[in-house]
Amino acid sequence: MDFTEPEERQALRKAVAELGASYGHEYYRTQARGGGHTDRLWDEAGRLGYLGVAVPEEYGGGGAGIGDLAAVCEEFCAAGTPMLLMVVSPAICATVIARFGTEEQKRQWLPGFAVGQVRMAFAITEPDAGSNSHRITTTARRENSGGPPANGGVAGGGGWVLSGRKVFISGVDEADAVLVVGRTEDARTGKLKPALYIVPTDAPGFEYRQIEMDVISADRQFELFLDEVPLPADALVGSEDAAIAQLFAGLNPERIMGASFSLGIARYALDRAVRYAGERKVWDTPIGAHQGLAHPLAEIKVELELAKLMTQKAATLYDAGDDFGAGEAANMAKYAGAEVAIRAVDQAVQVHGGNGLAAEYGLGALIAAARVGRIAPVSREMVLNFVAQHSLGLPKSY
Image 1: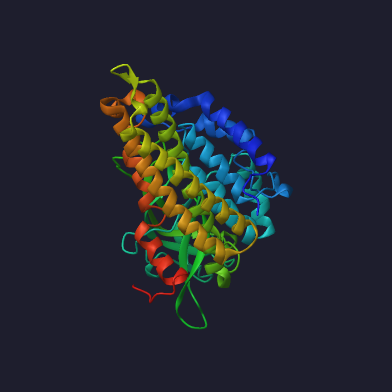
Image 2: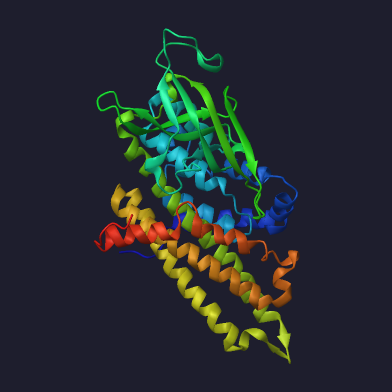
């Protein structure tokens, strides 16, 4: 077993870190507080191929795995330039289309993902479903070839009509389309089963509304309203019967990327705390010499490295095709990453004292941002439920 990353990934990390540093946290903070987006950084990262490292080579990507894409995400976050859409667009959406899409869908979407020109949001959460995806009510029905088209759509041709509502969907205002998790009726059983649809954001009947958040971020959250949205037959990704496999093929990378996002935030906070503790002097002694500050920072370093190892394990298992093994490791990595990010930010603020809440130090706003990792894309409680049931073999608690 090799615990050293390949030279190619180390070089990738270095290049991404340099790009992130060239923009810096000041750029990100200005965009976030001013209601803007990280378009310039995203576009440059796309042109350089960093966003498409995991897209298959035949479609213009780097042909690497989720581990490399996670490294890109981590380095941008560690540079103070986090881009939440990375967790969604190239990780979930591009991965699902690459693994399960038709050849036509791959040709249509993957080259754009490879260079960052395509941005796609992912919509699964609903107001009344929460973590219980079995209660999703967004439903697609076959277009009635004999009746009038919905919302100006084209009747017939085996198209779909999609209706429902989604909540806490990231980056919709930047996206060209949304990969929507819906349900469709099984003709054999009469029961609803999950299905994934690519929905253009300019489709008739598709509306979204921003959710005001206390988190300062360049990525916004939205509520979606799908009112009889007409879709062509090829809006369905893959097979109706493979939807569960397709869904989890996207959720495992989401957890791995979520872990990397948290790891990057933890590194950013720890780096600033260590720098400040080494430079700030009280009574002619750097405050980092005091064990009351040094030991908590050392503990965070230990926890950070452990979380990073689990994230790398999850990525390795996923890239090897072990979806179940990757699911266990990805959940653990996401849990560990979120916990160390929260602790790192909290301790970094404490080390800085009052300066920790001053905007110029870039830490105060991270208090809420780091907390998101405990909630999304799956709560820490649901992760513990998964580990208790699947890893420990305990009875299901819900």
